[in-house]
Picture 1 (cartoon, helix red, strand yellow):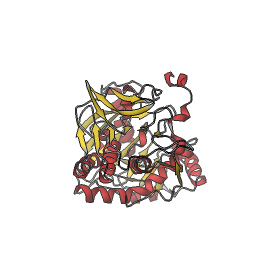
Picture 2: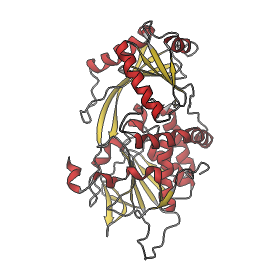
Picture 3: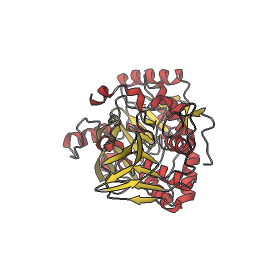
Picture 4: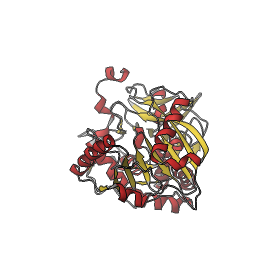
Length: 406
């Protein structure tokens, strides 16, 4: 990999193939890897590992890149989305944010496809006095963390985005919070993975991870066992549906999000920056689409679009950008964020099954965390190390097996 994690201290892992102290255990130089899940993270790992010489088989229950990876908005909003209590996650988010430009460039070169990394930045706005008070509190919190944010008066916001609502009260610019077209990323990753030599098994659901003697030996699809030296579980919101006995089931659940897109004139868009407004976010695409999102619903794998959910998205967005009422609706959809118990990803080796590696539970940060997740997991598989920046996000943080059923 041309971009390394050398800026993050790495240490040998005691799991997933590394030898216990005092015992010599030969390591397969280029292990055969089975990846469960064909979203952007699974595809990126397939690309990187195949590129490094590993035989790679990737399995997806449907078509690759068509789950949460397709439903996402593609925001790289490490600063704008920083929240109290998530300082550890912020470190990981910012680490991945710095990797995105090189990652995007390498992916475009490998695939021959553009992924539309846009660098205008993100603006968070306030519309009322109450909004303004909350935004000032958020701005102070962001400054306290040393984040690169800038306070904007209402006039300064309007100079950047002239079509915003007249009652605009102020805003915060996050110049390093960019965006990428997640659907183009998924398509490019599929091409890159295939070119690198990975084998993609679409419409091939994995029912369980096969184990023997406390070690993963492959995966089972239907009645077929596919042997592997390492198994990566990267199935997003569907991760808990894969039997990983004797490992504890992962505390990952689907968090439903409704979204929609409108059609702007690509030559004269009414919005240029990613915009966070009270109750909604708006993401402009180069092709003229304007993405509006997103609801947060604890309804399992419910795929229904609801009048209330769509109305809320349109109403909040309209209050910030009234001219969108003239735009055509292009698409409406539902996605499922893979939420863990603490809304942070689950990264690294299983503490219970050797050779089983987790790359799931990214909640709303799957696209943002794509480069760092790919490097952390690939470096572990190839070299047995885990970067310190990823160590707080191991599965062992969820405690004993009894906690898994909560």
